[in-house]
Amino acid sequence: MRPICTYTNTDRRVQIGRKAIESPGQARPDWQIICEISTRMGYPMPYNSPEEVFRELASLSPSLAGLSYARLGTTGELWPCPDPDQPAQEVLFSEDFPKGRGKFVPAEFAPAKELPDTEFPFVLNTGRVLEHWHTGTMTRRSKALDAIEPEPFVEIHPEDMYALGMQDGELVRVRSRRGSIVLKARIGVRTQKGSVFIPFHFREAAANLLTNDVLDPYGKIPEFKFCAVKVEKVRAEDAQEVAA
Image 1 (cartoon, rainbow, N blue to C red):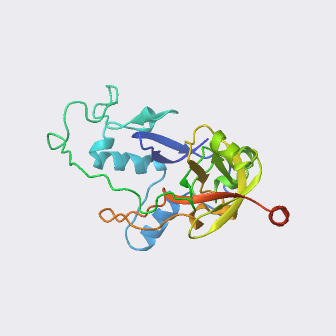
Image 2: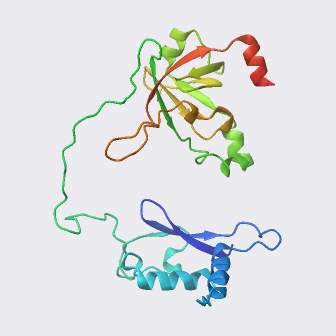
Image 3: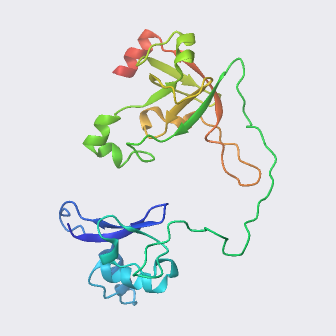
């Protein structure tokens, strides 16, 4: 399998991306396209391989110094690795921070803008599942991944599901003050009582139709991870319509 790029995970592991199948038609790796565009715009990039690109990148980036394709091998390597003959630095800041001591800033707790009440008694948390990535535009096209996790669901604690009179796998409606979606209920002990979890990968039951877009006053981050919802049984005629 020929290398086509390198990528770095959030744990600082630099790995080589390798081609699994031949590209269809006239499709080319990104590095070749970028090199040609740059050359046509007047800045020649006469690289012959992604290894040459990485070699230059490592020579100009202190965090990548000491790394090479040979050292990355099949499992990758952590940065920083200043000495090519010594192990990589597993802990980034073992004794101090780049500017000395770390600065801790106290913060006051701020409750969510929308809390559960009698009408919307559950807290909705949205997130990912192992098999899919974000909107699923890539992972849901993978037959293997789609076979493992093919459809949307709402995970509910067993005691809450029993109190609602629902069954595992039953179609339910999750409703907030902004919208509603229909999807299957799933028993899950990872979800706390009083909370429900919905993955946001499935456009046919888009979780963000429910979420609250109010902004944090300081970070300006929307409150997509917390809002109040209720879970209802779906009428038989509605369930048939969804199934169709």
